[in-house]
Length: 351
Image (cartoon, rainbow, N blue to C red; front, top):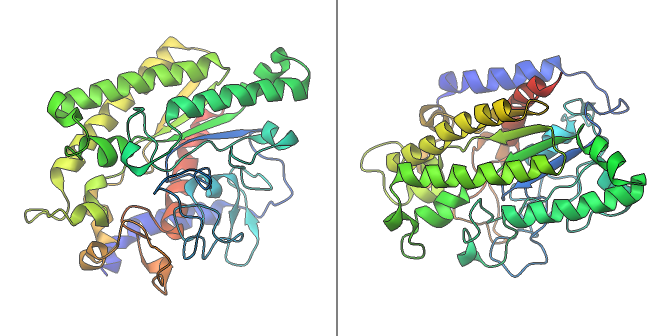
């Protein structure tokens, strides 16, 4: 591994950690945290669904305090780290400062929902048909409907809808979605016709247009602090590298297509901020890592050998030295890097 070229990302990670003070007992920086997305932040919402996209078995969760909960990694997701970060010595360091992880919508109940709910679902996308070849999943439209039900439950807990809307206006809303619209839709022409209907430019446009309507729906529900994540270079994942790269380090046409989406998403964020003066939307580039940075962190030959899912196989012994845990999903250490970077973006939502 090229340790010299690893330094920028890891130095950034360490710098953020140094700035964090142990604060397990302090109040969270926001009173509530709602998460929408796909397998990158799914805490186990797919466990009871009929789908190939569920991982509630070892070795997933091998480094997570609660074991295999359905998270698509060996440890924590970025949403987990944002909510509450634990160092190797067991001491908590403050990011958002919650005492516990945000519960999955599949099991969230009682007063816990006032502090937030995680609606993310492996295989989900912005488009409803995305991921259907995997089986059941909770699309972004369905996640928003689930959030609407949560709002009604919060209104009952707080006494009325006015109190609920006031509360929801102080919450943080975190979106990590869109990758499946490419890897489990546009780039699978044998199952989907989107690539025959749209050029990459056109597809990015229609995706962002639909995303725009979904974010506006969330705004109508009372959301006022919203972080949307850009997409990572999907053409550099182990699974996609198996397609062949024609001599490049990654699958370039995939990364170029995703970059079109990211560029349009940045413009959308500006438009939303201009349209809704009482709200703040931010684009987080934490997952938008340049392919050169990504490849510098791992041995490509190792990347190519990782299967789409680890089906009860023995995991690599030193997970902290690996970028990917399986064919698509980052390891715990990478999620920490992404989350601490995203946290810097989220701070911009403060008044």
